[in-house]
Image (tube, rainbow, N blue to C red; front, side, top):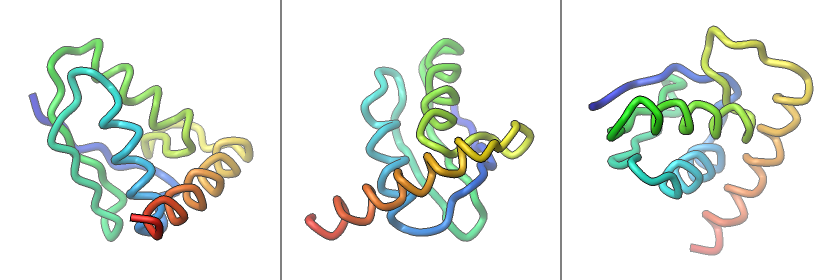
Length: 92
């Protein structure tokens, strides 16, 4: 099944790289596409359980869904994820 989620704190290609990398590590998640301009991430998922894991992962790395609380801690986590993604993307 395919889904597109509107997420918070998505700012740049560093963020997109981190999101893609982290979601790719989840069994059952494939065909990940991150659209920075529209604050969206799309992917295919094999089961509802995989979708729940993906949403939890997004929140834990600082990119919760648009209708989810966006605490200071979550925003700080997104900055860390963004910086990590920029460094990893630069090394590629």
